[in-house]
Length: 92
Image 1 (cartoon, rainbow, N blue to C red):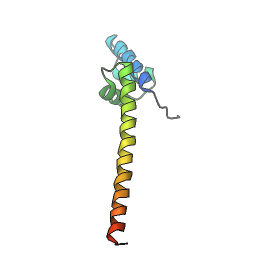
Image 2: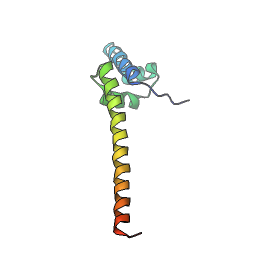
Image 3: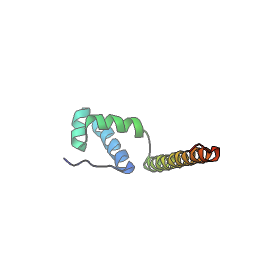
């Protein structure tokens, strides 16, 4: 089975659908099977996206990607700084 990547909007919509199905008396395993996800995926999504609205989930994903990009920039600049300090000391 091919692995699927769900968007934040899809995840929030599936969690809402899961809440409705659970309220109707279905078990988590039945709901997960109906949503075509693993039960563990449901719990992970609920932990990360539980209570978020669609626009909030979008914003969360964009902030996470920007944060990782900025972390990469800081790491690159720190490495450049360390190399320049070594060259300035003459220890090469």
